[in-house]
Image 1 (tube, rainbow, N blue to C red):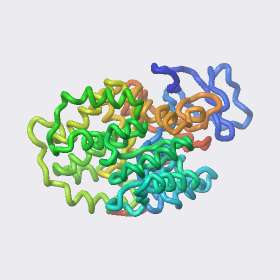
Image 2: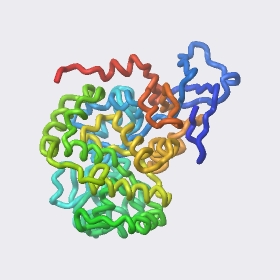
Image 3: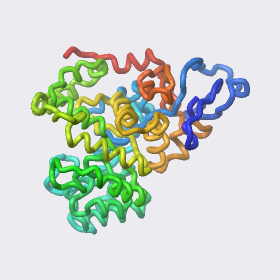
Image 4: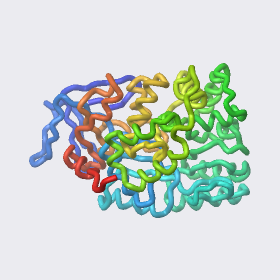
Length: 410
């Protein structure tokens, strides 16, 4: 068992985790934890148990058909950062066991400028309108306030003030009217490293790595969290350099709903085969600089959340979180334990839910992931799912496979 408690990795052998009524009732040595009569026993010998994973930045398709994919990949919680009222109903149905899927934590519609193209948006222009928009979403039961591009500074201040008074996290982009300094003063979580690039390097394709320590230190001192979403940009670079067909040939792509497949084909047709990576770059200068900036943030001690920005870039729901974790280890330099923190305890802290989730401790919600290999030795082991417990419900491998088996041909 890898409980994800404390600041250093632990492997606890010969453990039993007892789950009752959706909660971890007891954790301890197999010799000391008796099993109740009639209990369902999941044999974990030779396997590794970790907390269920959280994808901290996703967008859902209109019908929610992709929700079972998250569970199949061991993702038991998702943060949906452009929500709408129907998704509040989905959240309730998942909680009641009427809909199969991960636990949903939702932002409301975006708070942005009138030029924003997404239909799920609110466009306040004054402090009073910003506060009213945030207040309406808080009363509706959303978990986060999502800031987007084009939001006026007055509306930003009103929304942040209302969220702070209600104890609701504010997350999102860096509006030009506010700038990085304003976002840091507000304590807003920054979604996407690319937004830090835009805020600090307005001239395109002009990047100076010598400024990274100063940028990273300012974010660390502000205590602001960052969701890098790097794997999706690496995916964009691969598509642009002509690798779309090979990405679509990955086994997990066949599990995606038809609507997502069509979305990827439509959007990627505009990109693929149009750009050749410049010599001396890993992906391209923009993506390479994002990676360098993320390295600097990590070295400075800025806390990360693992998010994928699905459904962009042929990122398959659930499975794409493994892509992001591998990117954080391979390209940014996190240890496997640090990468697991970004998808377990860190999002629980950010969502102010760490007393109920994020670690394997008695009294917490029973969200668990059983793996066939050790993720502390190789973060890629998170792909080797041997069973999932979500809100106390056990999903055996055969059940997970049946839930997501393709029902169409493409």
